[in-house]
Every structure is written in structure tokens, then in C-alpha cells.
Length: 109
Length: 112
Image (cartoon, rainbow over all chains, first blue to last red):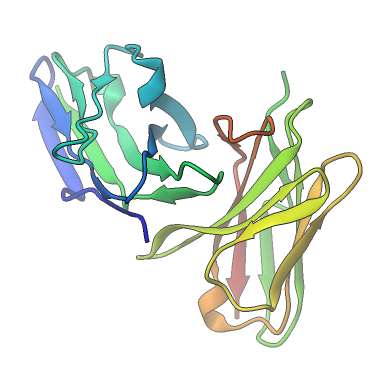
């Protein structure tokens, strides 16, 4: 069965510092990976999907199949990046998402 | 465009009762997904409906059921409510074929 692990429940950085939110997965096939973000008092929204290979709000994420990881990175964190971040996996043949438990990112001024 | 809408926002029930939660997808989306976000358990997949049919089901007992209507809106029904059913229930929708899912604000179900 597929599994997504986000090892850090809480992550705190200072404004302007680099940030990396870790995500590891286990899945026997070729998964599709996503990052979702939930800002305070807002709904869960899609941030990135690995097949798009794009940068959103300065964030990037690269799928590393060898290490089964999909870490989210930003070179210079901003206070408005403070939010809950969820990594999610979609299996090849279906549509269900398997979520990690989330990382609460706090960017301090 | 209007996002995914869920109703009610909050629902308070007692043990043994039945709860009905509703979801309207984004216009044009034919797939609806239900997830449970219970305290300490993260987001767990419940059900997936597409074109009126149940396509996949998560590891939940049969008292969790639902349906999708011809206009693609959906209901989640939870029978014989138990205390551990207290959670935020999120609905998501997407175009068919496993496209990215867009979430609603959720219904918070509290069991007393």
C-alpha cells in the first residue's frame, strides 16, 4: 500500500532563509506527487504537481525516484509562506490521494 | 469560477444518529472525492464518485456511504454515528481522469 511520510510536524525558519519541507513516499508503481497548502482560515489548495515541473510562489519540488522523495524547497522564505503544507500521492491507476500528516511552516520576521 | 461548496459548515449530532453532508463540485467537474480529517489522523480518503458511480472506497466501514447525483453534486451519509466520527469532512472535485483535485472548506461534524 502507498504511504507518504512528512517527518517534520513543525518547521520554523527566519524570513529570507532557505526552507525545505521533506516528503518521502512508498509506492510500487509510478506515482503522481502533489504539494497542497492550507493558509490560516483558508481551504486546502494545490501548490505544485510534479509533472508540471513549475515554480509556484517561489517553491519548487523535484521528484527523486531513487530516493522516493518529493521535497518542497524555496530559497528565500517569506512571512506569508507560513501555512500547513501537505504532500500527497496519487496512484497510477486511480484517483485517490494519499496524504502525509502535514508540516506546519512558520516563517519568523 | 465558484469553488467547491459544502454544506452545512457545522453539524452536531449524538451517538447513533445519522448525518448527511453535501457537496457541490466546480462547474464542469464530474469527479467528487470525500476525505476525513480527524484529529491526529490526517487526511484519509473515504470515497470517490465519477459520473454517478462509486469508483473507489477507502478503509472505512459500510456505515459510511454516499451517492452522486446527475448534476454531479454528492452526498455523504454516515449512519449509526460514533464518537470517533467527529472530524472535518472535506469534499474535492476534479475533471474526470484523475486531474488535480480542488477542495471545499469542509463540514465539521461533532458527535456528542
